Length: 257
Image (cartoon, rainbow, N blue to C red; front, side, top):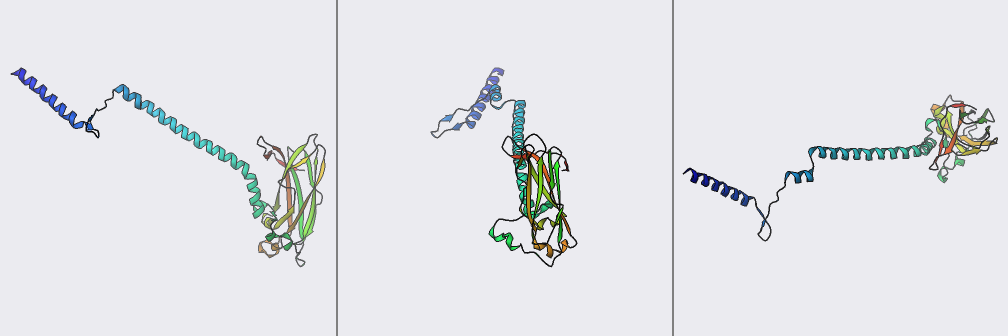
């Protein structure tokens, strides 16, 4: 009896397994059963990897993404560094920000001759000049006149003299500013030598003109009352072309010329 019970138990287990197997079967469109797929532990590891390998793959992907972001940031920074100088120049010339004189527009709608009408009943303004060079530029750079006196709307011409005291040809670039800073929007330059390449041969001396006027709107601004003296300052820096052909200045401390 015990043997019969054992065989009966085994048979029942087989029937249950067979029933479960049939229940889990899937069938294709023709009604044929699709053979279930079984994977060994080795096959599973080969396909999905171990948890350690999965973690390493995730870390590599994260590092790759970080590297891409870092490279993009570097490229953007380099592009900004090349564009910042002309952008800064353009903004300052249009707004007079940071003591930069406003450059006269070339369009017909802003013809400077419309504003070149001296205000005869206004007091004359004293315009003084200053020149300096960076400590690594072996140039002598000085204004030819100490001051000029002009009316708002009246044009004036001033000159600076630059001498290359070295035995080598050198490129220089000048920056400029106006003080007091609030006068800058009214200080309009028609012609000057700033922000442009100035190459002096060894021992060469050149004269550099500045053609400017004070906008008549100066007289209408209540913030300009009490301002009688305006100083135009230029500073020359040594410059060179980098490997990309971009003219850049070489940093150095400023010193009187």
